[in-house]
Image 1 (spheres, rainbow, N blue to C red):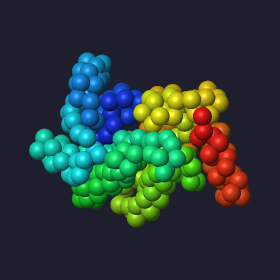
Image 2: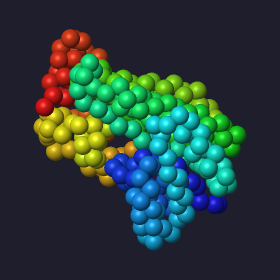
Image 3: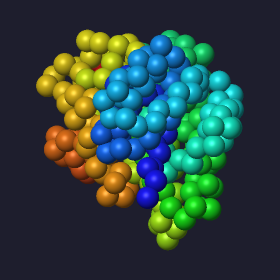
Image 4: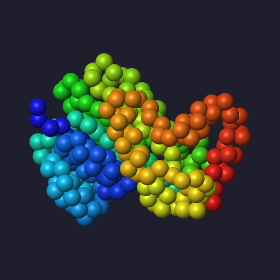
Length: 259
């Protein structure tokens, strides 16, 4: 049986980088996608040396229109058949919506929603034709409630969760699983990119590492788990959301996101 191939976006750092190494450990060939071409080359070289798998590099800014289509076309040009898709690329932003940058929020929507959806659309059709495959979309515990001070980010992750659960149901009889990975705050560099350094969310307790979250996500994906919430505390917090008065919930989330 020939080795399978995983395509991972946002593979140059954090959870995406760790997932690349985990797939490689299980002798899965890789297509790694990110903007940082130097980081991709370094990761590819290291993985090839350690695990002897094939690693294709596709530099891409998924905030650009039809970036996912460009990635798909390049994969086709390389004659690579993809068995696993990991839509990991994404970022957030902090601040009052009236004050934050529309340009950054527009790019966030393009990466967190548009590129993820288009990438899934393009590759899932091939999976249907082949008769199987696995998809993992990076959602978040942010997906389960609105997030004052990070309004657009929380909304994008709510979309990812809803979308992933819906297509998981549609595809369940076609040997294709869809997993929405929902980590909470993680030591991944996200807080720096999202201007969240100093927030209570990232400073009130010891956070799991990117490697821990990646391994949890990989195992959930291999099991075909539809919604995977990493960490007991995160499971408890998500579990109380439906029973919490909305006004109080919003105030608590705002306080957690605050600095």
